[in-house]
Image (cartoon, rainbow, N blue to C red; front, side, top):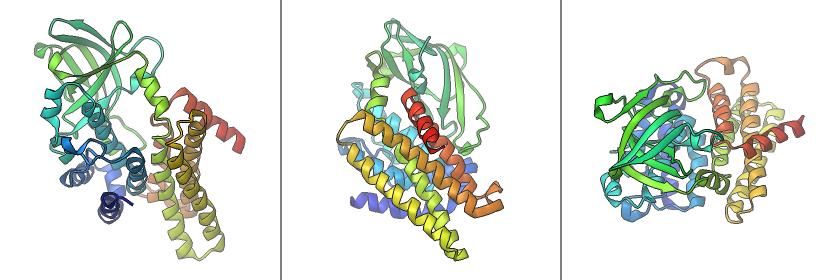
Length: 355
């Protein structure tokens, strides 16, 4: 195993996992956990070393996301938003914008979120961009931006009249009209999973994005092509969630000394390990139908393993500070993160078959 990954995994188990329930519900504890990762320069894991990143391969990065999700779903989800923004910025042709943020983004000195999942939606674009002298005017709604109070900026996605996708850097704060347009953020949403991550929506009206804040312009449909190419990626979070559920099941089995609990753990643990090996191998073959089925299977395992933890925990799982209850809620979020029409269909087919 990569020595950097070993260091991160040891850190996660020693300093993050014991605080996972507080991290899930208390933004200040989550912010401290995120900063600890930044202090170790682990917030640009896939960016090239010359930019200040770690330069992990796709396989190593995704393997690490399993370990991180196993320790804390909320921290995993929040840092993933930042890592996604950093990846966009690392690929940008806007070198001055890169220089502004690198290497600070690796160290947590600059934290960036994302707001472009709405580009996957069909129909009339939710966010529209029109070119104007010196930049672009942006108008529309952004339904999901995670990290209010953590991130100072976010990469927004908008659609140009010809269908191309614009990505630009915006402040993640309310802005008044006299500053060149309006950004109006909602209060953090009341979510049943990972509420500490402070997810908001935004209404943007005639915001003037100057050319120097442009991250990229991609071809029409680029986000759909990217979602297809990376169809497996969000499944690795689900696998981490599955392992987290099994950690609880294993602990209860050892405490209660009930043979059937140990047998349940062994059976599910074997399935999760097998899916992990299959998923890592499938990253190399680019066979979409197989990757899609693996993604659905990984979601299914998160649901089953988290439910096993709940059942084994009994009524105690219903306490708000229960680890089993938290992991069960995390399985909900990881079941729908990065969701596409194909993932919905494959996931539902899995449920129908099991029925």
